[in-house]
Length: 109
Length: 119
Image (tube, rainbow over the protein chains, first blue to last red):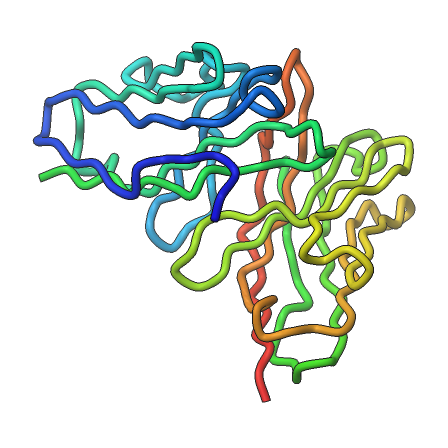
C-alpha cells in the first residue's frame, strides 16, 4: 500500500479535461514539494511537473499541477490519445525516504 | 547527450546476489543525488535507495540491510549491490538523477534493467 493515495484510474474523452488527485500527510506532501511523472506503456517514467506546479522544458501547458495542504492535483486539458499513460505523484517524506503514489491509469475514451 | 544507461539485470535464484550498474553521460554522478527506483511487474513505482553528493546513503525499509548503493567517480557510474534476493525483489530497476530547486524531484531516468528472482 502506497504512502500517497491516488485513484487507480480516470477516463475522459479526447479534448476534455481530467484531474488526478494525490493525497498524503503532513510528513510528506504537507511539508514538501510534489512532482508528477508520466509513464507511457513500456517506457521509463518521465518528469511532468516539479515543485508542485512547474513544467520542465518541452512539457506542454496542457499539463498543470497544484497543491493544497496535504493533497496535490495534476490537471490535463485538451486530452489526446497520446496522453494515455500511468501517472505518479511523488515527494520526499520526513522518514528520510522518497514516496510515490500508487499510480493512476488514464484512459482517453 | 545527457543520459543514464542501466545494466546488470538478469535471472537469479532466491538468496542470490546481483550488482546493477548505471552509466551516466553528460553530467557528473558524484555532483548529484542519485537514486534507484524499481517497478514490479504490473505494479507502481517504488523508491529503493539514494546516495547524496556528499556520500550519505538511505534505503527503503524493504531493502535495508540487503542492498547497497555506491558510485565509482572515475567511471561516472552508479551501482546497486543486491544480496539475499527474494521473489518480491523481481522488478525493473531504474536509476534516476534527483535535482533540488526548492523541492526534490527526479529529472532524468534510465530505461531500466529487469531483475527476476526465481528458482
